[in-house]
Image 1 (cartoon, rainbow, N blue to C red):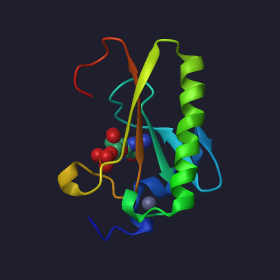
Image 2 (tube, rainbow, N blue to C red; image 1 turned 90 degrees about the vertical axis):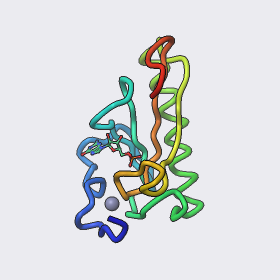
Image 3 (cartoon, rainbow, N blue to C red; image 1 turned 180 degrees about the vertical axis):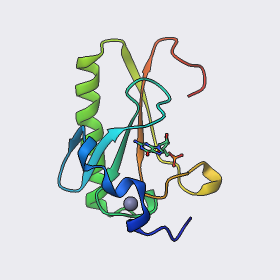
Length: 114
Ligand code: 5GP
Ligand code: ZN
């Protein structure tokens, strides 16, 4: 799992389902959303986890998170918060080994344990 190569990676071919992108990062909807409009933001370059990101990639992912926060809160006025995070390592719950930020919209009384 840890030596997964880009050729075998499910997140290395997501250009068709893009919500927004910039030069180094791209965002798409999670296939099994924790809440409605659960989004994943990934570096375009294949790398394993948060700690493998370059500083420009961290910035690019961060800019998309801000862009999507604005977009989602305009689209859906019930969104009143977000959970953001990276799982790093199998023991931390990482299941796809192409780095991704979870951007999970939250609404009043949606779920107790996302
Ligand atoms: P992790 O557990 O590695 O932090 O998160 C992996 C995420 O990828 C999960 O939330 C899971 O629902 C999502 N996921 C798994 N396979 C696919 C897929 O084929 N397409 C999309 N869009 N999301 C996926
Ligand atoms: Zn990949």
